[in-house]
Image 1 (cartoon, helix red, strand yellow):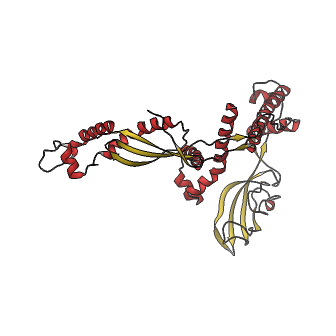
Image 2 (cartoon, rainbow, N blue to C red):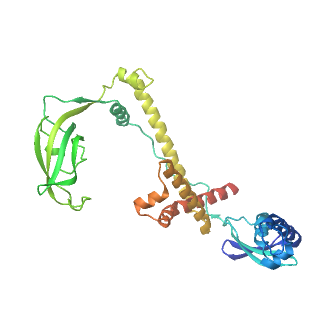
Length: 368
């Protein structure tokens, strides 16, 4: 195929014309005729026996053109695009200009990869965070393991205090009438956790197992249920049980139970090494991100919108896959959040644009 010259019609968008030769087009039309003739009813002919010219006269001369073009276009377009040397980043906008004794003349318009200019990429420098692991960091990791291996013990002989788990029955009343959602039985409440409205847990502290008592509290003004927001209510409480969490002692026996080590010192050394490795990796990732940001600040490129849209499409597919793996769907997500597809796409747009620009910049650096 002779080289095809493309014309720029706007920034990074080109159009070019190409031809499907008449011989190839006629041959494909005949193939389409043979494929479809058995399905066509033509008066005066047995089904499947009507000549091609008769069908064309009855249904129009272009009756087989669309399917023939669909069959020929992909290969013809790819060959024409290769001839132009364009680096296309979009699907083509195609128009049929003419079907005549030369064949089928077509015009294609495509967006192309933009030119990328980088003012400076050598010698970029960023600061790497110093990585430190303190004794406090190590103990925080160990305490988390102790928490996972803790057990709940029943408290006897003393009143409730912060840190206890109080097992309670409760029922709330507004102006003497029980309100919906205000009742629970044998509910385990961590005292001091702040999981109930302000003032609730504090009034259980000091009570004993078996006590029945009232709690007076006021719901916050911004409480979710409008009928309760800012209202003073009474909760009737019965305290069934108190429990306290017992953490295992940090000793060699504990270490043997939860790790491959025999002593506390070995265990701490291993935790320090692992925390250091994780933080080093995190610091390296920050450096890479900062270097890319510095590179992008020196990069200029007129990125076609279609490249960003295609990247957003990928983000949407990934997000949909994650939702489906959790038993959800985009439709459910939109229903619960009130968000639309347009809003979700807009949320991904900035990251998508950065990702596209990063690929273009790194490819340019590699070329340079």
